[in-house]
Image (cartoon, rainbow, N blue to C red; front, side, top):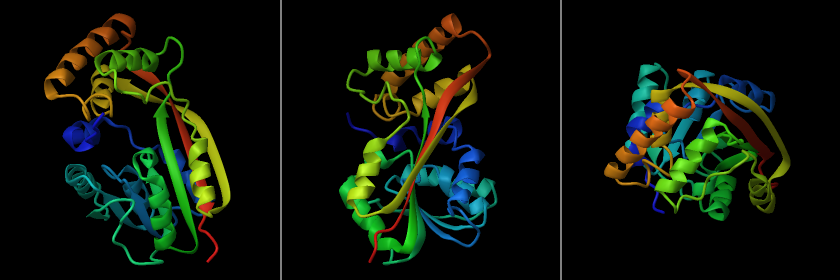
Length: 256
């Protein structure tokens, strides 16, 4: 399944809920996102993490290979009247200087990287005792909830999609950074409910890997119409409370 989030950049910017403020508050307890820090946000997409850190006084470089997503990120950042330096590059080759970052973050994107190469690149650009933070903000399918029903519909329209059924926890990422020599690995997770109108939930799903980022526009339209009918029939309340889980892993850079 070929994924191109640039194909759904407008929906991505408008409908994908950014990380909640509570995540930034929690990360600050671990020394991440502090005023004056130099932060590199890999796979920044539309810049949800980057803007959050910049809003708290950090100097942020947002890295992403998608020109379309970065254009949306720039527009959102200008509207918020904050500054982020967005650059077209990859997590495996950031083109940044050695030991130039206090913190490197990756939000909702670690699974798209060549993870071994990304760990090496992060190690290269982090300063001594620098920090990495890998974060996720996932919808959670539980029996009978709107997420489960939506995932079943995605699978029916896109059998190649294999990202459903998750629990929002990522133990494999701990192995990735542990084998890369990162130290003092810590994790946390907690659940939140995000409010969506039917229109916003449809937009959120169009902006997902299994729909707008991989199906043709014609197939996306057919899927969207079916999702609208599903929501009206099974989840008619005007505001959906959608179960999500925040998860993060934090670690110190390897010893020189």
